[in-house]
Image (cartoon, rainbow, N blue to C red; front, top):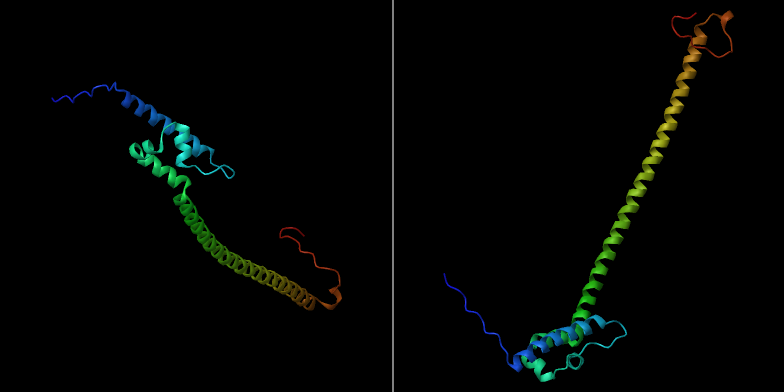
Length: 165
Protein backbone atom coordinates (compact mmCIF):
# COMPACT_ATOMS: atom_id res chain seq x y z
CA UNK A 1 0.00 0.00 0.00
CA UNK A 2 1.42 3.32 -1.10
CA UNK A 3 1.10 6.27 1.27
CA UNK A 4 0.83 9.68 -0.38
CA UNK A 5 3.59 12.09 0.57
CA UNK A 6 2.74 14.66 3.22
CA UNK A 7 3.15 18.21 2.02
CA UNK A 8 5.50 20.34 4.06
CA UNK A 9 3.89 23.17 5.91
CA UNK A 10 5.11 26.34 4.29
CA UNK A 11 6.32 28.84 6.81
CA UNK A 12 7.61 31.43 4.38
CA UNK A 13 6.26 34.93 4.66
CA UNK A 14 5.30 34.93 1.01
CA UNK A 15 3.02 31.86 1.32
CA UNK A 16 1.42 33.24 4.49
CA UNK A 17 0.87 36.62 2.82
CA UNK A 18 -0.52 34.94 -0.28
CA UNK A 19 -2.99 32.92 1.73
CA UNK A 20 -4.20 35.91 3.67
CA UNK A 21 -4.36 37.94 0.45
CA UNK A 22 -6.57 35.30 -1.09
CA UNK A 23 -8.87 35.38 1.92
CA UNK A 24 -8.96 39.18 1.84
CA UNK A 25 -9.69 39.17 -1.89
CA UNK A 26 -12.50 36.65 -1.46
CA UNK A 27 -13.99 38.72 1.36
CA UNK A 28 -13.70 41.92 -0.68
CA UNK A 29 -15.30 40.22 -3.69
CA UNK A 30 -18.27 39.06 -1.63
CA UNK A 31 -18.57 42.59 -0.22
CA UNK A 32 -18.63 44.38 -3.56
CA UNK A 33 -20.99 41.84 -5.13
CA UNK A 34 -23.44 42.06 -2.23
CA UNK A 35 -23.43 45.88 -2.22
CA UNK A 36 -24.37 46.14 -5.90
CA UNK A 37 -27.78 47.69 -6.34
CA UNK A 38 -29.40 50.25 -8.61
CA UNK A 39 -27.78 53.25 -6.89
CA UNK A 40 -24.42 51.71 -5.95
CA UNK A 41 -21.48 52.09 -8.34
CA UNK A 42 -20.53 49.05 -10.36
CA UNK A 43 -17.80 46.83 -8.88
CA UNK A 44 -14.35 47.39 -10.33
CA UNK A 45 -10.99 45.73 -9.96
CA UNK A 46 -9.60 48.90 -8.36
CA UNK A 47 -12.33 48.80 -5.72
CA UNK A 48 -11.65 45.13 -5.06
CA UNK A 49 -7.89 45.71 -4.71
CA UNK A 50 -8.43 48.72 -2.42
CA UNK A 51 -10.78 46.70 -0.16
CA UNK A 52 -8.46 43.66 -0.11
CA UNK A 53 -5.30 45.70 0.39
CA UNK A 54 -3.45 44.17 -2.57
CA UNK A 55 -2.04 45.67 -5.74
CA UNK A 56 -3.65 45.27 -9.13
CA UNK A 57 -0.54 43.42 -10.34
CA UNK A 58 -0.96 40.82 -7.57
CA UNK A 59 -4.57 40.29 -8.50
CA UNK A 60 -3.86 39.91 -12.22
CA UNK A 61 -0.80 37.71 -11.70
CA UNK A 62 -1.96 35.32 -8.97
CA UNK A 63 -5.76 35.49 -9.20
CA UNK A 64 -6.74 36.01 -12.86
CA UNK A 65 -10.02 34.12 -12.35
CA UNK A 66 -11.15 36.58 -9.70
CA UNK A 67 -10.20 39.50 -11.96
CA UNK A 68 -12.21 37.94 -14.77
CA UNK A 69 -15.20 37.43 -12.45
CA UNK A 70 -15.10 41.08 -11.38
CA UNK A 71 -14.93 42.27 -14.99
CA UNK A 72 -17.81 40.00 -15.94
CA UNK A 73 -19.90 40.92 -12.91
CA UNK A 74 -19.67 44.66 -13.18
CA UNK A 75 -17.88 45.53 -16.36
CA UNK A 76 -18.71 45.70 -20.02
CA UNK A 77 -19.15 41.93 -20.26
CA UNK A 78 -21.78 42.13 -17.54
CA UNK A 79 -23.55 44.90 -19.42
CA UNK A 80 -23.57 42.85 -22.61
CA UNK A 81 -24.93 39.88 -20.69
CA UNK A 82 -27.68 42.04 -19.17
CA UNK A 83 -28.54 43.45 -22.60
CA UNK A 84 -28.66 39.95 -24.09
CA UNK A 85 -30.83 38.76 -21.19
CA UNK A 86 -33.13 41.74 -21.64
CA UNK A 87 -33.45 40.99 -25.36
CA UNK A 88 -34.25 37.34 -24.57
CA UNK A 89 -36.87 38.41 -22.03
CA UNK A 90 -38.45 40.82 -24.52
CA UNK A 91 -38.57 38.06 -27.12
CA UNK A 92 -40.17 35.70 -24.61
CA UNK A 93 -42.65 38.42 -23.64
CA UNK A 94 -43.60 38.85 -27.29
CA UNK A 95 -44.17 35.10 -27.65
CA UNK A 96 -46.23 35.01 -24.47
CA UNK A 97 -48.38 37.92 -25.66
CA UNK A 98 -49.05 36.07 -28.90
CA UNK A 99 -50.01 32.92 -27.00
CA UNK A 100 -52.24 34.97 -24.71
CA UNK A 101 -54.01 36.51 -27.71
CA UNK A 102 -54.62 33.05 -29.20
CA UNK A 103 -55.87 31.81 -25.83
CA UNK A 104 -58.25 34.78 -25.52
CA UNK A 105 -59.60 34.07 -29.02
CA UNK A 106 -60.14 30.44 -28.10
CA UNK A 107 -61.90 31.42 -24.86
CA UNK A 108 -64.19 33.78 -26.79
CA UNK A 109 -65.01 30.99 -29.25
CA UNK A 110 -65.88 28.53 -26.47
CA UNK A 111 -67.93 31.16 -24.64
CA UNK A 112 -69.96 31.86 -27.80
CA UNK A 113 -70.45 28.12 -28.36
CA UNK A 114 -71.65 27.68 -24.76
CA UNK A 115 -74.09 30.58 -25.11
CA UNK A 116 -75.44 29.05 -28.33
CA UNK A 117 -75.90 25.70 -26.57
CA UNK A 118 -77.77 27.40 -23.71
CA UNK A 119 -80.07 29.13 -26.20
CA UNK A 120 -80.74 25.83 -28.01
CA UNK A 121 -81.52 24.04 -24.73
CA UNK A 122 -83.90 26.83 -23.68
CA UNK A 123 -85.66 26.67 -27.09
CA UNK A 124 -85.95 22.86 -26.82
CA UNK A 125 -87.40 23.17 -23.31
CA UNK A 126 -90.00 25.70 -24.53
CA UNK A 127 -90.96 23.45 -27.45
CA UNK A 128 -91.28 20.42 -25.16
CA UNK A 129 -93.48 22.39 -22.75
CA UNK A 130 -95.69 23.48 -25.66
CA UNK A 131 -95.97 19.88 -26.90
CA UNK A 132 -96.92 18.67 -23.40
CA UNK A 133 -99.59 21.36 -23.12
CA UNK A 134 -100.98 20.44 -26.54
CA UNK A 135 -101.04 16.74 -25.65
CA UNK A 136 -102.86 17.44 -22.39
CA UNK A 137 -105.41 19.61 -24.17
CA UNK A 138 -106.02 16.96 -26.85
CA UNK A 139 -106.41 14.27 -24.21
CA UNK A 140 -108.96 16.38 -22.33
CA UNK A 141 -110.81 17.12 -25.54
CA UNK A 142 -110.98 13.44 -26.52
CA UNK A 143 -112.25 12.48 -23.04
CA UNK A 144 -114.86 15.19 -23.20
CA UNK A 145 -116.06 13.98 -26.62
CA UNK A 146 -116.45 10.40 -25.43
CA UNK A 147 -118.51 11.33 -22.41
CA UNK A 148 -122.31 11.39 -22.83
CA UNK A 149 -123.80 14.83 -23.41
CA UNK A 150 -125.48 15.00 -20.03
CA UNK A 151 -122.24 14.19 -18.16
CA UNK A 152 -120.10 16.71 -19.93
CA UNK A 153 -118.84 19.40 -17.63
CA UNK A 154 -116.44 22.20 -17.74
CA UNK A 155 -114.84 21.34 -14.47
CA UNK A 156 -111.27 20.04 -14.59
CA UNK A 157 -110.63 16.34 -14.61
CA UNK A 158 -109.36 14.76 -11.45
CA UNK A 159 -107.28 11.66 -11.71
CA UNK A 160 -108.24 9.03 -9.19
CA UNK A 161 -105.57 6.52 -8.30
CA UNK A 162 -106.49 2.86 -8.91
CA UNK A 163 -108.14 1.10 -5.98
CA UNK A 164 -110.02 4.19 -4.79
CA UNK A 165 -113.45 5.14 -5.86
